[in-house]
Image 1 (cartoon, helix red, strand yellow):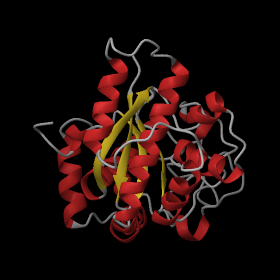
Image 2 (cartoon, rainbow, N blue to C red):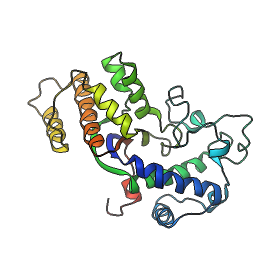
Image 3 (cartoon, rainbow, N blue to C red):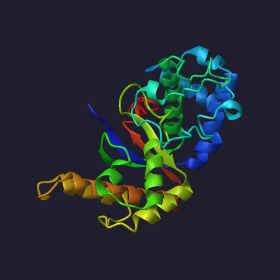
Image 4 (cartoon, helix red, strand yellow):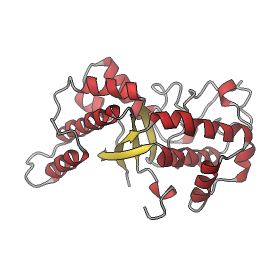
Length: 266
């Protein structure tokens, strides 16, 4: 089936100051603040988030060494890149939270999927701006696999886009979900590093990227090869990164994100 990969303008400040505190409070106390409660009501129409998750009492800031403070996978670069929860879950034999933590391998997979729906919905509702298509069923690591560049910092930044969401990003057993994101400063670094690579030059706009994509797909393009599209796609990432950091935003990589969670008309 596959999924459309898109690179989004990402309001990292709202993510860290509104989304993360609300979700951590929910895990710890079961309290849903007004906007999160309204979001849960929307999601319940298509994917029910059970009430028993409201009594998990998880203080992940105090005890969890599997997730960073922003819910990113702590060992994101070494984690298995597959989507099966059994391979992505925490395996700690000694964590004090392991008997009731939704991120531990002993928990039902449904539990983390329900919670990840909340995370995804919150990110969609609060933090995401415009986006650009960058490929089918791809993650950001494919650029290194196809173009073989040796810039270590660039590889690290693309890896964060590919794997930072490895624990909390996936929805169901498919390729859809949030793969990773960058802060504004990381986004600026990514733009600077990508500017050193020979990539197609585009005007700094979403319209220009869409026009370049139409041109690539048209009959006027005699060589619509994977390598050529890889370069074009990476130029889209560079362009969105430039637009984002000029707005003091980061970027986020998502595949078939469920906008219907928050927009009944989507």
